[in-house]
Length: 346
Image 1 (cartoon, rainbow, N blue to C red):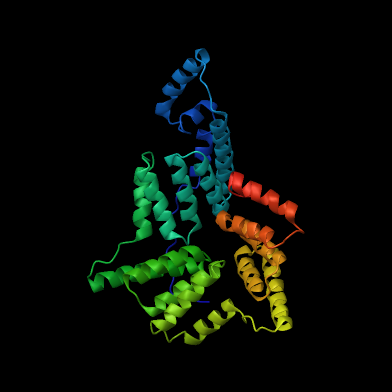
Image 2 (cartoon, rainbow, N blue to C red):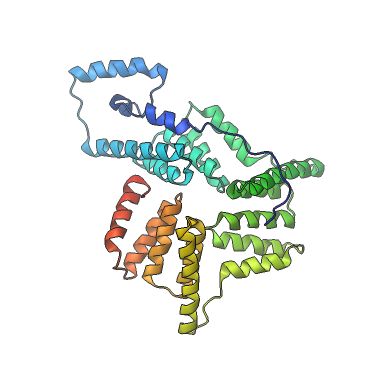
């Protein structure tokens, strides 16, 4: 589907940031320094080595275990980030910070989510949390990214705001044409905030539909488009809403089960093709029509493979167990252990 005009791509941000951080966090002594290893810390590290060589320092085994697990999660995050798998990098970094609360880990988490796209408010909040927590190494970068993500904001001058909205829209259109639908969604949202026009809402809905994995949000955007007087793409919006909602339960068990099987088969095809967000949507639709534990398991699998939403994946696996799922109990327990321990699972 066409979103609109084209524009330049977004600015490239240091792809090797996480790789460099992974190297910084490696030495044992640096762990005690809060994973910091800048040039200025080397003298401190040397003094600490000298001190610990002659002084017995009691170590809390639980704290040490958490620190070790945090480093393991961070290293996995750095590897997935370097491989451009920003969703799973986000999961790993998030868990690392949960285990070892340090501003630098917050910054890495924010970096991964920004590169993933489609979740502006969360990303801004992470950069702000980094600054509030005392992050200084990347303070200017964090402030710059916050400014970029927020956009110029409305000035009250309609001509100025409309021009800024057009610039954001064109940037979103360029992302859309290049298949970067999450970033397109972010820019269309910025554009709408500056100049609330129904056509921009439609473009935002289009981008989010192509992102996948967020059915209810997408339906709400198409409905908002219609409610705000959108007419150009009225039929398209209604068709997309109907497709995303699915047939709905009829009360006829045989008919509902048949519709659920059709949705499940569609989801399975998406899953096999690596389209995990679309697979998740279709599995959820199937479950709504025919609530069976095995469908829940498949939905959880899709969300786990998608990445970036580990808490939701955990909740689905737990629900599978609660609703009587038994076929894949061993797999579920293994996935839950990895998701809870490291933040993500293969």
